[in-house]
Length: 344
Image (tube, rainbow, N blue to C red; front, side, top):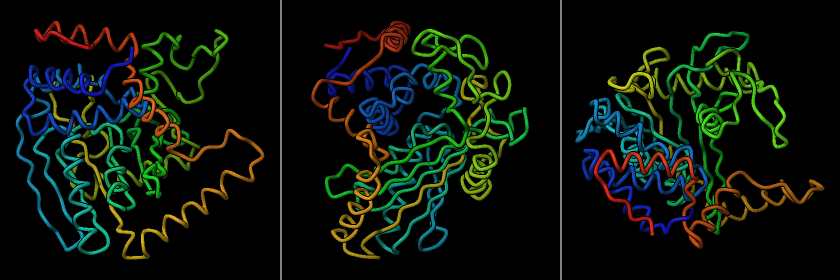
């Protein structure tokens, strides 16, 4: 079903409040999950609420929390997230990175003592909205093998970046450094598309091998050694450098319910106006966009982010889509919290 954005946000607000989330963090979580569901990133939207509130209940996500923000240099900041929501800490981090970039031309903020942050696309768009290039990195619980390995050593370690366009519909890349995002595997299982580790069902109902899995519960790095190298880069910048948990020191969101995630994030913003007028940058981006999409011989070529913006436009027109299996989970959560849902 599709739900009006305002009612969707009200449902989120009511459930977060009933689940014991303080208002400061709840506001940023609502903004984040709403944007993800509007953009079609449903595996990072309201679907995550049951596990997030379980972690709030055990104290793994601290509510309220008291993030400690420090300036390490004119263009560098660090945040101790105090075991609060990663969604909250990462938004504070990107906002600070943009403030530093406005002062110095570039801003970099490392976050430690945090939790799962959701989709990186949300944070880099915060920078794009301010006329800046945004980059977001985060480490996660190990479920990805090394190149030529079969045991998990690193997380899916996502990276995201954005570049603003004149129409506001920025170019956005948000990717796991694994061959498949862990959330995509969970989504396939939830929809009964996964038969067993390594097997899935194609559109015609036939079983197919999924080359993303090295072994049961272990993903392969994207593009072999290249993805493994990118995952190491993310781990170095978001965890080793920031003082966060490294590799096996990061807790599982689902298995370690009473243990803070110990995740690390790195948020970076580049002030385009220090390089050229924003109008000139927009023109140059459109020149690049034309070069990428017009000589391909196919009408199906789109820039990264185009599908997200199309879904956001549809969500604004028709409401935010919540799939049936997610709706059932949220209704069960509401019953357990004694919250009466009003979708319509």
